[in-house]
Image (cartoon, rainbow, N blue to C red):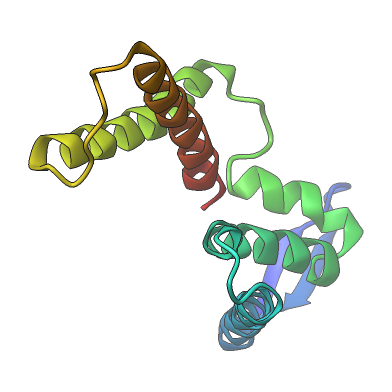
Length: 144
């Protein structure tokens, strides 16, 4: 499949794109990275978090290995990375945090989690763990 695009200086550039090959490459790299994480860290609890970040890492790898240097800025602009988008940052950080907090709240409500509210120190420990987990969950959700 041939695609015609305009380059930075207005010249017509012909590029060959094969969506099936691109999808197969993405799936192959993603599967390989996920397998490498699972084999390298079979009993570590962090392997699940690392596996969630694999799709983002795969996109970065493919961007820097397949996309020619002169076309990367155009690629990033097409997916919305040409500007900082500071107006959307609060919601981009708050929504995953709220979703993680809601998940923990639901776990407490249904009895799957039982915070120890009798001792002040245990409450502080549980609250600190909740905040740390929500922050880590926010990072993982943003990475995915």
